[in-house]
Length: 309
Image 1 (cartoon, one colour):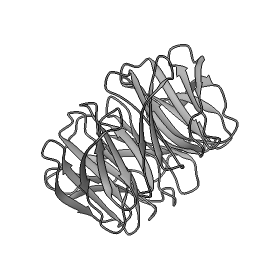
Image 2 (tube, one colour; image 1 turned 90 degrees about the vertical axis):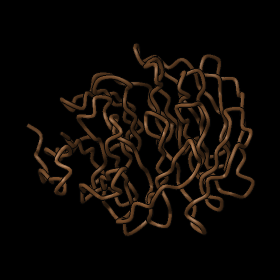
Image 3 (spheres, helix red, strand yellow; image 1 turned 135 degrees about the vertical axis):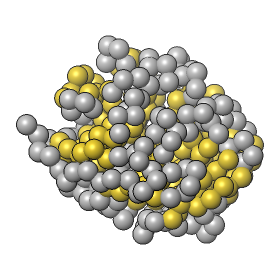
Image 4 (cartoon, helix red, strand yellow; image 1 turned 120 degrees about the horizontal axis):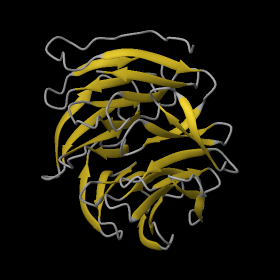
């Protein structure tokens, strides 16, 4: 029996549809990155020991082991069609796996520095990789051929994420959030987080809203159709490093170097829950596709699985 961590944190009055039921820490797994399958409860984890595994969040057991990276991998993505898993490591290598068999089908090495983020396009035909070399490259998933390039040009690129419409949201240090076409052509500057910048901007499943993770300690909510900021989500005491909408879109989560993961209502802009004792460098986030679980990393570096209702 795995240990039961500090349990239920209830939502604020008036938000009874959200509840943290329980949290469980898995002490033998130390994840660096994670990404959920588009259906069910499977999640791919890249681990500190360079292994990559797929687990069932409900049982917290490994169901598949993939090839290990030569250096730790801090980026992971699972394609919307469920066919591909991609992972990226500190040696600037991107591995692409067949998600059904676990076989590695491709290695891509175009970046000069560590891979920071990976994202598949809505049709799963494109894969965007963000590197520490301040570049986002877009590749054809089937061939690995590079089909788009976004250069930071001094803006310090942190994360590129595909929207449901197929464009790319890119978080930068000096210019906030930028919007690009998949071929690398600029579309618009959303901005936000002036003087600090954003680690990335993450859309909801409908593609109507996005939330940016700011170095100013603020998570900004965006109307992606109007390309305008709706409101600021304030509560973190340090950098916001990642964000994710629940599959239903009814709430979202943000993580921070303040050691917390916070839950928010995107309509009222209110905080509705909190997980404390989370990774101090900012926990990765992964909701399972059914919305039943959120996976994070504890302040001890172990996998934490939180059941939601």
